[in-house]
Length: 327
View: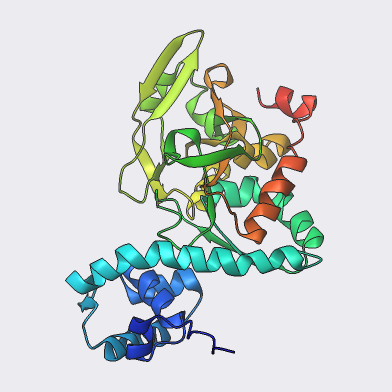
């Protein structure tokens, strides 16, 4: 009987590479643009990833990354390797994931990239029952307000709003299907400064603003009966959207200004009376968020389980009392 052929490709055999870990690490670092960011995304140490890339370069005998104190960039050889390596590793991962089909329960890691609003307002109703239903799946959630390529960021799927969805992705509704941006202030603030009757009157009020990671401070938009009004009020406090929202809410409750943010984020304060709706007839309504993921034929088992779970657990409609109390 003739011996079986060696399955190791000649290039790998010649370089002594028999493991894919270093190749995968190189790809993560190159896509992230740095060791620290790649380590943050992967949940590994930057020093360990740096050592893996050095080991790979030593085996291949060629430099793959230009390194500086702040970032890294692929060399010509590194760029060519990235072109071929990405699809190849996806095929390897897909092949390995086929084994999951022979398990009683899906297993593996699912990585999601989501904005803070989804982490606070959408996932708390989904994550606990999902983890209970799939005890062998590990869920990693990266909270990121910037618009990123989920695959390049090392994630399997993301949550975004319709205007920020990437092309060639499958979008699945997740969370509330309609949301509103609410404007509110504390009773003490309104007693001292008066209740605005029109959005333009906010220009004479102290307002609490949010800033995108890009540095832009979005204007406030209002709509009523086909009339759209956009104002850019002065801000006594400016916070980064996402992590600084809780501070803005507490500042509004303390009577320091008017806040303009997701209605669901303000719901506890509106229900308790700590904040009072301002211009509720002008609040803008928009479509809720979507889970989006690559439209490839084979989905990793953890992602397929999550997609099926979301499809089978549609969000409940808000209670009538909650809609009335919104203004």
